[in-house]
Image 1 (cartoon, one colour):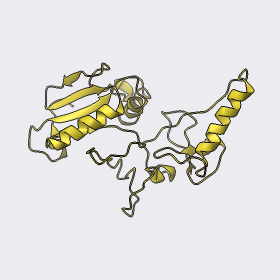
Image 2 (cartoon, rainbow, N blue to C red):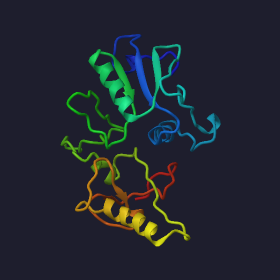
Image 3 (cartoon, rainbow, N blue to C red):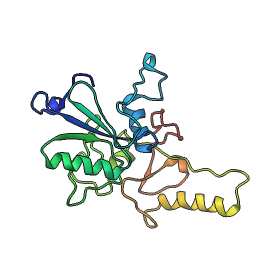
Image 4 (cartoon, one colour):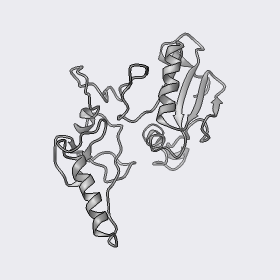
Length: 208
């Protein structure tokens, strides 16, 4: 981002762009690194991996020599608050938030398209309240999956809990969580089950 500024987004020349990132232990930050920077999916710059700007210490701000300020945030709430504050002040700020986040009446943030596909509006321009239909359909690419498993030595109660959780997430009559869905790899079916899956490999493209 050397010598870049908010002019990338149509702002006046040399306007400051605030990048509200997360710390290194954040799953959201790890997802962002994998998707946008190909890290650690590719090994080093020679294969295309890029290091995220900023630090992993919450509350610190790095300046890149241009007009980009990169701040490390401890949680999603901090990212939302920082972007909302920037918007209120007429400034430019971007960040990555998971799709279970829905702006409240006092928050000023919005999700943007990735590769021309919105995460929370259909192709017809209709708002998707659950913020996942395009990902389930395989059109929105920026999503990752957890893998549920039980050790062979696990207690029966633990195995039942894991299996029950997977089944519940795939059944909208039991639970229907914004921004979350189950993939076909879980072995369940339902309206919020994606046909695409990555088998737990964040560096792999989804298999449809």
